Image (cartoon, rainbow, N blue to C red; front, side):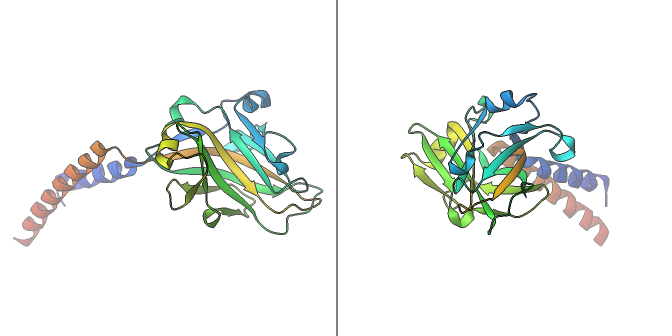
Length: 234
């Protein structure tokens, strides 16, 4: 295989790998105290009676920071961990295809495990009418791993539904005012869980210019391949 084709293949692989990029919403490494974390993240819901998440230094993947959120299923059936102060860099996620959350869930020492898996949904609020779009029950994720796992929530009208307001999903994603992780389970006595959230990020779709660049590269590859094959057949 000639050098042109080899180089073209290398560039194609590198370009394809960079087409979809991740934008960090929060990895909790910028906070030095729980107070700083709670200035950005708050909570609501019956099972959130223990309050907002606290900073857990060294408890994230590779020894990074995590947010520790307490779930009290004796007090209610849902708990929402809410990013109420959204950084300007992620207030517009209209070009995002999904949101990825890396976390794990454990039963708190001295308490019973729940009778069923705790479920997680993503909810996003924003837009001109302050609408809320939330993952539907059919696409809620069962949390049953005691080690860090990454969960992907797709941002589309098939897997999300509007639960408040009148704005479209695209309108909501273009001007985000809050991002929520909604945990759900049945109300059960003596049941507590702790969830460690390591990071939340958005997967961004390529810009039109990047698609055009990839198409041009594909043409170069095709020409190089045809030349290489022609030489081999002589």
